[in-house]
Structure formats: C-alpha cells, structure tokens
Length: 307
Image (cartoon, rainbow, N blue to C red):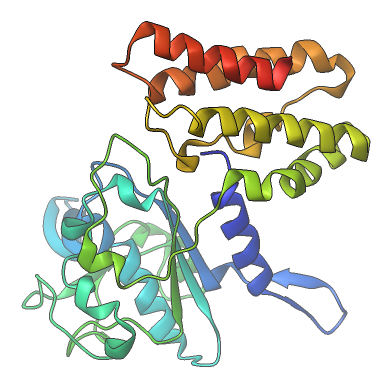
C-alpha cells in the first residue's frame, strides 16, 4: 500500500501515448488507453457484454428493452479494431484488479488473453444476439446521429465481432493490486500465469519516491528527505521483524503516506501522519492479535519514525 502503483502506471501509459504535433507541442492521445477500477460488484456484463435495459432508436414511447451491449473492455477492443491502426499501441488499465471475482468477470477472456491466442476469434456468452451500442455525443459530433437520439441504442450493422470476439494483438493489459488485501480472495492461478508480475517494494523505492513527492511541494533539502527515508525504512523493518505477527515486507508502508507532510510544521505534521494514518493500518494488519503484541509493534514503529 502507498507505493504509487496507480500513479506510476497512469504516468507510464500517458507517456507512451504522447506525441508531438507539427508545431512541436506534446499531445496525449486519450483514445489509446482506458482506465477502470474493479470492485466486488463488478461482473461479466460490466466488463465483456451483457443484457441491459435501453430505449431503442425510433422508439417514441421511450419503453425500455433488454438488448446485448458491450462491456467496457469489449467496447475498447471494438474501438481498436475499428481504428485498424496495427502499428499503434493501446493500453487497458485495471486498478485494484483483485477486488473482483476475476473468474466471473473475465469469463472466456481467460482464453483470449494468452499471447498465443491474441487475434483469434472465440464465442462469448451472448453470441446469438445482435449487438447494440449506446449513441454518444461523439457520434453526434461526427454527424452520425441527431441530438434527440442521444442515449438511445442502435444495432451495429457492420459488427467487427460478428464472427467472434478477439483481443487485438496491439492491446496491452495492465493491472495493479495489493496482494495483502484481506477483503478479496487470492488471484486465480490460471489468470496469474497469463501476466508478467512486477513487485513494487516500499523500501527499495522509498528514497527516490520521497524525493519525487516532497521536492516539488515542500522544497525540503536533500538531507532532510534522505533522513526521512531512512526513518521510514527503519519503521518498515520493525514491521517485518515481528516474528510472532508473521508480517512480511509486503506489509511495509509506502512513501505515498507522506505526500501531505508539511515541512513548515515538520514535527507535528509527521506525528499526525503516524497517529492518524499509519497506526490505523498497523491495527488492521494485526486484527485479532494479542493487545500486547499490537502495542509492541506500534511502539517500535513510533520510535523508529518519530524517535
């Protein structure tokens, strides 16, 4: 927690999708990436496709009808295929990817995500139904529909996925997660092997990240930030040194917890951060443990950070 995973991914993707125009100005092509955040109620119909109540185009009574609509991922894949720019890279980012039931959310994508099956067609759950799309403002700007059609559904006559859905080869799928999150189950092994994994360890990035966070906002000196980084690293070592609690370096506190540190009121500010933010997560880590063990952990962390 607090290692800047989401921020880093956003920054990386935006950099990959930024180019210079003829005048030398940098322009980020937002059509090249899509960002979503998973949560426990996220399901297949949100992500791939499902039946949704909509008002069909030309229905003057505005009565709702259940039709097949793309989920957010399939809609983005459709956008990529319709653009048909195979040399361009696209990015789909899922924040907190392990907070949903991934086997249910992904469905047949477990097959389609594999590198060897990219670009190969496969059937989805609602393959026998026509696909509809919601008319958006962008369609009206392009002159495809009028303002009165906004929000209504129209059947896709030239459906690029009519013969089967597939994931384009030039789509990069990125997820972020806290592996220690207790509110969700472990990630499906079948899905795990379809991803390359990058571990973000708090102590390894602490010094560099604190400089990035605090140099701009607080104008702290290099010595001050270096000393703070050492104290936070020492505090994290106290967390993983508690053998009885079984806490590993995965439970270390990340640099983002200190982004609101006020250099003008350093002592009081860092105390507030520890007592109001860090203590609460330490208590969450140790829920159900003996009171004496919890107090020992908090006291050792407080001593390491605050002295």
